[in-house]
Length: 80
Image (tube, one colour):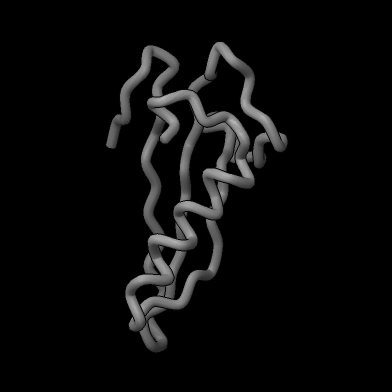
């Protein structure tokens, strides 16, 4: 969706949350879209010339907390 131009962070977060909700063993802790240098959350709308950003997700499986992230590069691809 980001690759196709979605820039509304609330929409992006909802899509990720909805995807996680399809797995009954997972309990979503958070979805964050952050500046990769400062880890500060970005605003409601990403600019048209999309900067680098970090998509971070944390879920619980029972008592275990799993956290992961992926980096969106301004050149238009994901980097792990």
